[in-house]
Image (cartoon, rainbow, N blue to C red; front, top):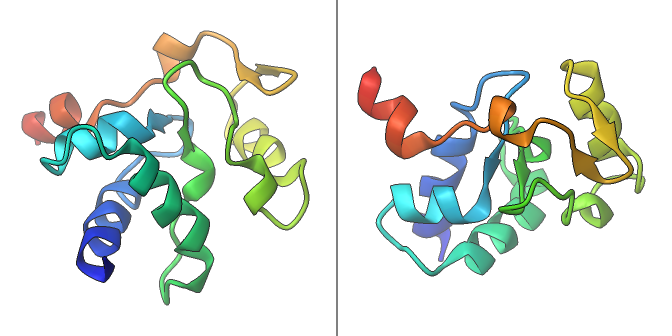
Length: 110
C-alpha cells in the first residue's frame, strides 16, 4: 500500500497551484484505473507524509470537495483552493473544466 500511496503523492505534488485533478484521473495515470477510492485513502493519509502533498487540489470527478472533512477544519480545503484563485459555490468548483489538470495529458507534454 505504501508504494501505491507514494506514487499517488508524486503525481499530486506536480499539480500546479490554481489547478485541480480528480481521484480517478490520478488512478488512471498511475495505471490503476478503478482505484479512485484508494487514491482518496492516500489523500486522507497525506498529512503523515514527510513532504507537503497538496491534497486540497484533488477533488471528485464532478469538482466537489468530497475530501474536505479530512482537513484541519471543514473549510480549510475550500480556503486553500480560493487562495489559489479557484472560485467555488458551496463545495463545487466553478468552471471545473477550466481548472482541471489531467496528469495523463499534462505530464505527457513535459
